[in-house]
Length: 158
Image (cartoon, rainbow, N blue to C red; front, side):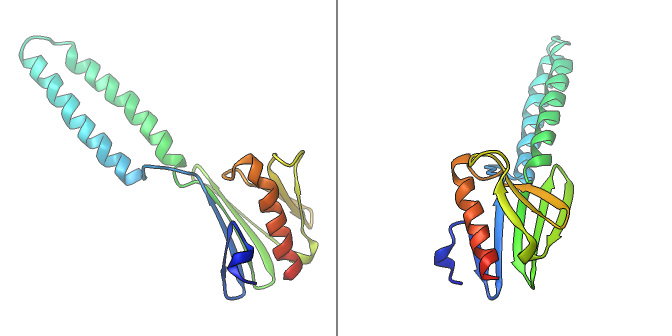
């Protein structure tokens, strides 16, 4: 199959891959550098005020940096979340990563059902052999039906 048939997939040889990822504008390492520079500036200003007698500025700077650090850690934990769907070597492999939790499920292509959970805008349920996985979290709701059709088309051709 040619790559021009697919909107979401990448075709390489006999394999078809769908990489669905969260849209993150800042990587975790960039966020770390941003946080380090924020700490240097904020603690530097707090130290200057400490030396001039304003003793409460530095503890509040620490409190602020702790709150920002926790928020940045929560963001960074989910920055690499994504879904990988691969049709290769006679198997449909679905890999989900969410907050460091990894789940992998394999299906036989001729025994898989791909359908919306409730409506065309809901998550896509891939099921077969007594297992089911929901995908499409990182695709806009109005495009999920197109993604489901694309996966079905690839499964029919397999």
